[in-house]
Amino acid sequence: MHAMIRNHAEALNLELDYKTSRYFLSSKLGKDRTIKWKPSNRAATRHVVKFYRNEEGEINFAAHRSVQFKIETIANDFFLLIAPCWSFTENGITPIRRKRMNVLSNHWSTREYNSSYLRDVFFWAYFLAQWEDTIVIQDDDYSIIIETKPVNATLGVGVENDSISIERLLSKQKDEIESVFLFDSAEDDLFEKEEDFFMDSEIEEEHDVEEDSNG
Figure 1 (cartoon, helix red, strand yellow):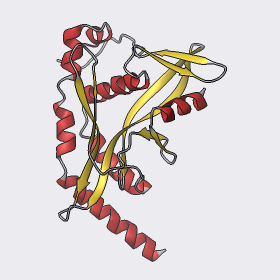
Figure 2 (cartoon, one colour):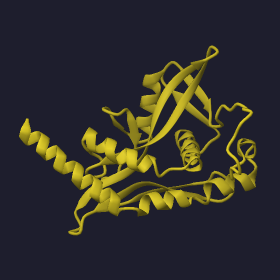
Figure 3 (cartoon, rainbow, N blue to C red):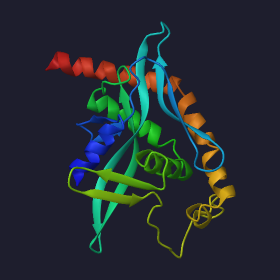
Figure 4 (cartoon, rainbow, N blue to C red):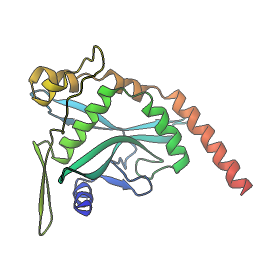
């Protein structure tokens, strides 16, 4: 089953970083990349690759929205766990060193809000489904059909004044879907705060050089 999911992801041109088990969309031309999709009657745009350059215009690194997939068994049923995350490459396709990757991932993750993470869960589910309501994964002998609507449960606690109504979202009410996917100020902040990322990246590179020379 895991192999079928991996083959499905590769068929959708997702690159796999084997060291971190993260799938990401690449950009081999050194250009930023966005994907347009329609979670409702209106189209939404998701940034998936952003290049950051130094003062000379050379590529410092590229940030990629990425995802990890895992099959979970709950009460004898199978579920697909979708865990959005971040990947970073040297040139749009080659992952950077693991230590530098961890530093950048931690900085970017702390800038994300729950609503942004939820948007990414839905985005990757619909991407795997190629914008349909179900994800269909096939090989020569079997077919796996997975709903894009996530499993949910009700708790007696919550976040006060949360701006997203999960119940309305899961029932696919138009106004709630559009409020979730067509406005994402947190995403803009993540892609615009470049200076800190340059600084952290350069410091980490210096540490790597020192460790290599001492070894």
